[in-house]
Image (cartoon, rainbow, N blue to C red):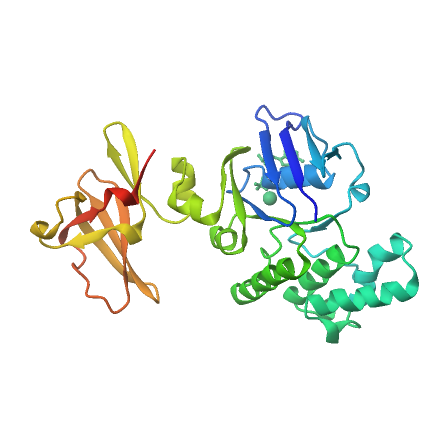
Length: 328
Ligand code: ADP
Ligand code: MG
């Protein structure tokens, strides 16, 4: 498989004073599942489009296997691309949609048939080869788009919010399919999403985008346990943020202990007074809303079935081990 290197890439759209992408550098390893995660407008699609060749770079360069591809036409880059909207040819069957990129590349007919069959099998659509797009569900159409994007064995698969148009259940299902495709193909995958759960569950590494810049790159675990900025801490999962001597102390909800009696707080622990604002049952746990003495809001959690230390309106002392805090 193939690695992608992004060197100091920027994009300034005409008429905008702020760059949409601002000096982004990233190394995507061969076979890696890399995700661009960030809020709407943070520059994810623009960066992906520059890699795919749909948007020219203002500065910087993009290399695949060490060769600069920034000035090549999209089809010369040999990258598979899938967008949120399936963009299938409406008058072609699933099989003919998948065959299209092979015909364009003048692949011999018998080989086209084998490859189309394999690609449809890969996405679990062997029985739907002869259906037109309108005879398929949204999730099935997106599978056809995935099959079409990988059928010519591109050097990497780029996906921009491919699950965004699907309802929850289909989204979860297709997310697992994409993870399986990655394992089976061993291809470099670049996935764009604003959904932290998708990013955390799918990725080898995540690049967190904010205002056109990459704030942090790391494994899901590194980003969650060791965020390097307040933005990353608050965008990935919930955080309690305490002001402490001019710095921010970040503690994840599951790391907070709650005490009705302050005397039960272990000496080595940090502590804050809080009032419980709400207790919400979320299925496998309770989310406990907290308001701290300085007015900031936060939360703790308790597994379902555990005894709740306090009810809404009651005062508690929250505590945590210093090893579970991150100072920013
Ligand atoms: P994301 O995919 O993270 O939501 P985008 O890359 O689409 O973000 O957009 C980043 C910024 O660039 C936004 O401010 C957006 O309005 C702007 N932008 C994107 N495409 C264009 C374009 N074709 N012309 C002008 N501005 C654009
Ligand atoms: Mg986008």
